[in-house]
Amino acid sequence: MVDVEMELTVARGQLGGRLRTLSIPSISRIGRHAAGTGMGAIQPKDSSRLVACTVATRRKHGLADLEASCARVGVPLRIYGKGAPWRGSTCNKLKGLYWFLQSNRNNYDYVLFTDAYDSVLVAGRDRILERYLAMGSPILFSAEANCFPAGPGQRPSDYPPSPTRYRFLNAGGMIADIPYLLKTMTALGVPNIPDFQSDQGWWAGVYVKKKADITLDHQCQVFQCLHSARSDLAIRSPVFVNRLTGSTPCVIHGNGHSRIRPFADHLLDRRPSLAGLFEDRLWYR
Image (cartoon, rainbow, N blue to C red; front, side):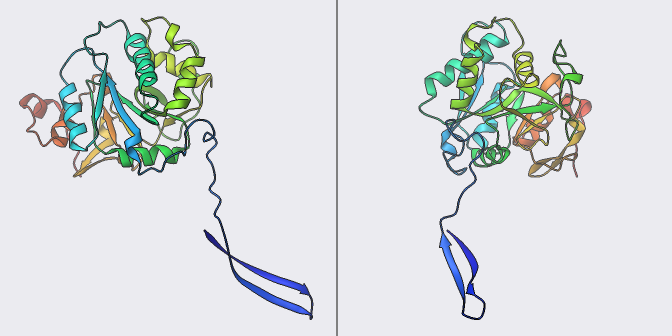
């Protein structure tokens, strides 16, 4: 309810009055994607409707760190693709995500995807979902400082301007409204695309050609990509802060072999390796 104060005058000098308080139901502004997509269907605190998932065909270095970080912040992690042969990122990551969501579409409203072997979570589902919903977009991808792959139609000149140097789509981190995402992936023929392609290149093409309603996380509110940007991320215990944007990212992704290990060591209260002490600088302030 909202209180509205109104002045009521019928005729000058005849009847004057003041209707002090009129209570009417508040009208919530519905997001432009709310109707038919599930956006706005739950409150941010209902974070149990968000599923966190990744693809991992086998156990490799880094997956244990992701699992430990998820356990630390209380986020159940679903892993799909276990034991399957690797047939390319569009097959295992993109198509795998599509079929995973198809089988779970009645159990969740939102999905958080992150790469398996070079990512850690530093915040729980409440904060992640709240920041995603504040963006007002059904699909939010992480953004990075490098354009890759820079193929025809998705070169730097094809991307729109960005308020920060995090300008380009990175497919290693995404949060989306599941009904809208599945509708989009079905319409774009995901089940039938060739296996051995770049999932990041595919999504970048969708973004620059505006085939779907996609927003990039230019301010690193949810996702932090480290490639060519490790010096942007400062460790201000107990949080990580992007010194360029002032944000405190929720998911850290060591894309492009940018060595996430020192950040994972700090997050998991683990003694850094000797190699890490010589090879890496941790940014404390």
